[in-house]
Structure formats: structure tokens, C-alpha cells
Image (tube, rainbow, N blue to C red; front, side, top):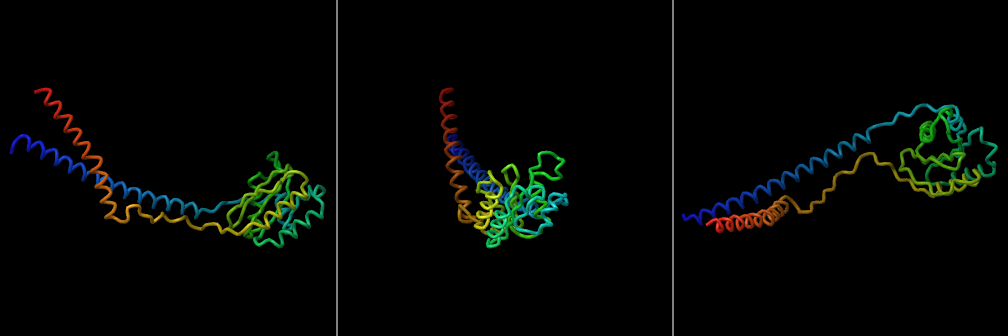
Length: 232
């Protein structure tokens, strides 16, 4: 075997080894990605299995629960809301396709209120214990919404201004909401296979390996050969 033949054979073996290494690397990467997706599903499943511990409601929130009404008003704020608006809002919610409730409560500017902005809605809905949508309208015009057993919707109705009309606007919007059940388990990883099976994946890995490794070897061979000719 001539020196030239030995060099060609060496380069050929190196190219084949490089392609095989590329294929093995592609297969290993694919297996690692599948294992990672499976682990992600397990982690999301653990999140679904967790249950939040909601502390018992304080006096103000308990007063809302004791009213047992679709529209509950903080006793300290009753004078701010016309009774006609409360009745209109309740009538609208009674015809809602999805259980819905509204509460009117003083915004907790300090910790002395006995509840927080996010905690009041959770305590109220948990104490009521019924599936549905819950919206707390604060006396400063803002609002907080939660849902029990359903996907929480986004409140778009204007909540600022007089509380009575605001309650009616919120009720009208809530009556149009649809029931979107809350997922009880994470979505499974997509079974879409871009390469259409193992055979397609190996063929793609061979192609990518050939396109990447072989040109690199040819370039390296040309560079080494040109350097050798200069030395000679």
C-alpha cells in the first residue's frame, strides 16, 4: 500500500468514525430530551397534586360568608351601595350559566384589616366552598378575582366609579363567562415525531453527520496537504 493510499484510507476511516459519532450523539441527545420531557411532566403533576392551605377568614370576610348571597356587601359599606343595584346584580347572577358571586369589601390599606388583597378572595371562596367564579370589588375601585374548580377569567368590566353600577357591570360580565374546567393533570408530552420514527431519525442523523463531518475532514485534509507541500 502506497503512502497516498494509506493517507486516503486513514482519512476515510476518520470520516466514518466521525459520522458514527455524530449519529450516536444525536441518538443520545434525543433520549436525553425525552427523559427531560418526562421529568417535566412529573414535576407539573406534583404541582397539580399540591393543595393550598387557606387560613380561616377573619371577621370581615366571615361576614360576607354569613350573608349567603350572590352579592355580599361588607356591613360597614352597606350605606355606599344602593339596594336596587344589589338586587339587579343578584338577579343577573341568578341567570348566569356558571355559578358566580361578587363581594364588596374595604381595601386593606394596613395589616390591621385582618385580611390581604389576595387572601380575602381566597378565604371567601374557600369558606363558601362552591365551584364557580368569585370577584371581590374593593372600595377603591380595584378588584380581585378567583375561581374554584374553574379557570380564573379576566375581569374586563370597568370597576371604578360608584360601587352600585360597578357591581351591576361586573355581574353582567360574569353572567357571560363560560365554565372552563380547571385541568387536574398536566398535558402529556407531544407525540409528534419530526423524523417519523427511529429509522427516520437515524437517517437524519447520518445526513447531518455526513454534511457536517465529511466536509470538515475534506477541509482538514486539504489544509494538511497544502502545509505538507509547502514544507516539501
